[in-house]
Amino acid sequence: MKNIAIGITAAVSSAAMPSFIMHLRKELDCRITVMVSKNATRFVTPFALKIYSGNEVFTDTYDLGDNLLVPHIKLTQDADLTVIMPASSNILAKAAHGISDDLISTAIVAAASPVLFVPSMNERMWFNPIVQANVAKLKAYGYHVLEPEKGKAVGGEDVYGAMASLKSVIHLLGQFLE
Image (tube, rainbow, N blue to C red):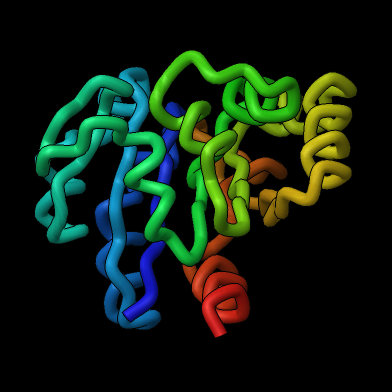
């Protein structure tokens, strides 16, 4: 069975992650380990993520659940793929510059598997030259980015920057796990 480590960062679309995780487990027949940033817990609870992933959920670099002394190493050590979804502009900037100041950013640097970012943010943020430079830098370092899509914003208007659809994510993850 393949293992996916998912890092959930703060974006409104993180509220959809329990459903995404349920579908990923079913469609890809994989084990999912979840890390969730403190700010993302404003949109989705670790308890909901635990129910849908079937595993302990980690929120802090110093969590010692399941006797993990160094979570950012252990959580990525057994992963066939590390996915940051949704990836906020903050985590893209941290990763592009090697900043490791929380569980998810440290796990990215420690990952031995391929790392895929699935960004989700307002289109003005996505098209900001700083964000685009960070994405280009991540790609140059060998990281993978599944670009956002057009979708509904919180106010209901169509905008670019929505997290890629479940279908797109499943298709790409399936390719990585072959």
